Picture 1 (cartoon, rainbow, N blue to C red):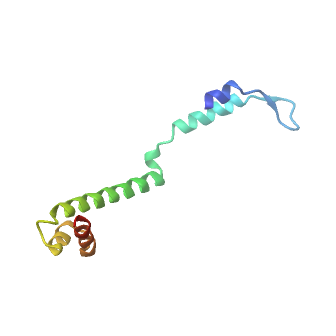
Picture 2: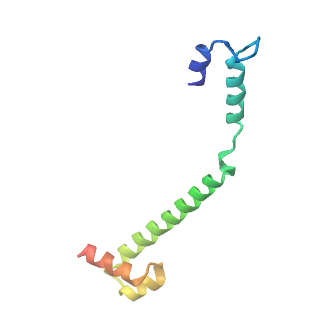
Picture 3: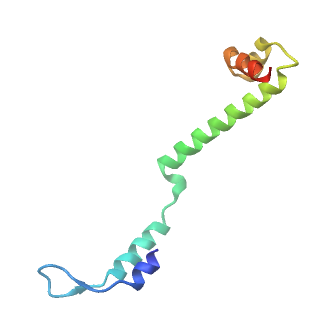
Length: 96
């Protein structure tokens, strides 16, 4: 997109100025700045990763609990895998 803007860039005159400004220089500078951004250092990236890891852990606990429904009691499953007993009961109801 930036290159298409650059291709169509034309010099403009600032109000009250006698010289022309070439937008291509500003676009090149902005492009250089954007390519230097390390997204892994952004707070939003870290928050997203943390939430994703939590979600993955939840999904795995649910999968393990679901696989144990026919083998163990709800109490043992809840104690050993982490989900509350109410969640284990819902898994059992889904299985039936």
